[in-house]
Image (cartoon, rainbow, N blue to C red; front, side, top):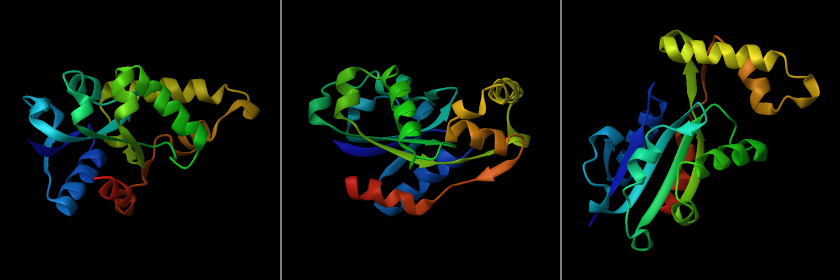
Amino acid sequence: MSRIIVYGSCYGTTRQYAEELSKRTGIEVKAFKDIKNINDYSTVIYMGGLYAGGVEGMKKTLKGLTEIEDKKIIIATVGLADPTDDLNVKTIRNKMRSQLSPALFEKAEIFHLRGGIDYSNLSFLHKKMMSMVYKKALNIPEEEKTAEIRAMIETYDKKVYFVDLNSLDQIVDAI
């Protein structure tokens, strides 16, 4: 049995983290679409971008995982939300619960990293979705806006880059 870093990334920041983690650890890295049998690995590190409330490729990749008690499972999300904000982490984890079995969610060591966004590179569908989310966020009363909502409003239609490769240290330690 071996170790693998698997990633789901639409615009590249998650892939950047995955490739850097591979470089630091010597663990093979693959896109989730290229994984044939996830059960071939005793250690699975899944890194996924946060899109529309879900973790890119995570459910598809990890649903076939069996005998999880014998495996080391690490999951890292990558998104715009500040992972030092407890409410952001709680929101992300609640959404993750709907994508994972309860046993897998409890077994996994979970980390959250910051990514980035460049609105000029978004697909038509993602641009449309972000436009709707932005317009809805503007109508939320100021006292009800979370830090995540305020940050989204401030960065809307801009290029922002929060990638911090040093944040991988915690995952290297967990491996």
